[in-house]
Image (cartoon, rainbow, N blue to C red):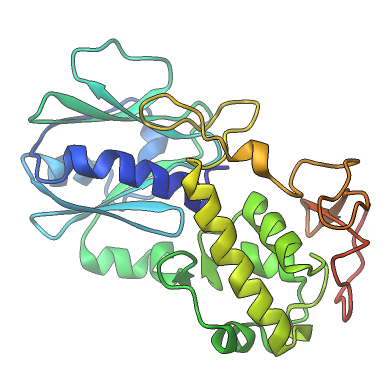
Length: 286
């Protein structure tokens, strides 16, 4: 789960506190968290004593640039969250990565399911990693409508699947794909290549509006509370979701009923009464 709004909310919460600080210690409790590091021993060695110059993000990845040009990458996976905590505070369960800085604070990656990871990449390693293949960031570098239509041109895959493909746009996951498509009045199983210029205009506007609104409320914390803000608060966008998770409820736009389909193995929530299914590329499984 954490998607772009949750990762960007996390970035904004920690950037002011750790930018300009010096890393004084690192601890990795689970070797699995270093599975993307070409040489696992490099992670702590490359961070040791370095200053954090900038905390950025691309898609769902936190990317902190250090003063030796190393990029410290953090991916939250399905259940990870970051806690910014005084270094003398007791560790909570599943604190799998702890990076301590010279202000007396810890950046702690808490990840019960260990689908997340950390890595410290050289610029060359970063370019060769899966991060190097990411598409444009859906918040900071969203393509214009004509460019978006061109990205989808000729694609027979469902638009929902294409929005989840991080090589097309980076940062959108299951929640915000459903929300953007509902806001744009486009059915999730419609072929990406069938979108006309007017559809692309609506979709681009919907993506931008959805992400902006989600950020305003700190992202979405689901009932499992796997995602929390670094200060422990919940993201409050769950109360404003239009489609995701609302199976059987009334559509706020047309008063139809939200249904759940399975598209390419992913649950998809949408309204058949007002989301245009014209030119759909493949049937969905209810």
